[in-house]
Length: 151
Image 1 (spheres, rainbow, N blue to C red):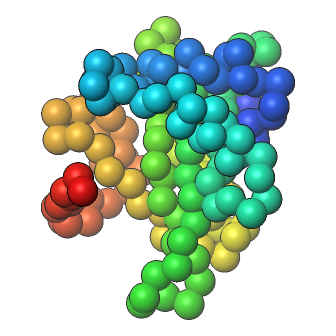
Image 2: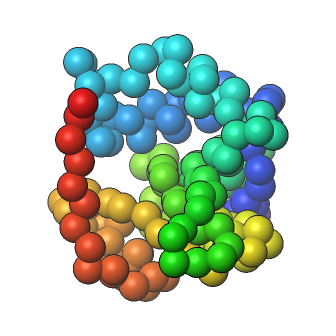
């Protein structure tokens, strides 16, 4: 059977949580950098709050969730319409190389078009070479370098 990309549903929590935890572990959000349980619960609740700009898609095959994509829309100073930020993208290890990541990205592209957005962007760690091979096929590198400061 094929991969189905769909909006996350409240009944998905038990399958979404291991994917979320896998994503956080991949980016070494463990120990003192771990995402607190109350932030995880708040993130989950935001997906179902119509006042929140945070959205979630999941990839499903035969009733089993294989991956997730979290994205949000925001304003941009050089565009009239919204811009879409693909914040989190993750597939479980067993599903990698099977088109799940690309399908999730295309699902975000579809939602962005429907919302009137003309751009989707995201970041990845410079060491994530496997993901970059996919990203180089489905998007263009912007050339921008990200700076941040914890305050």
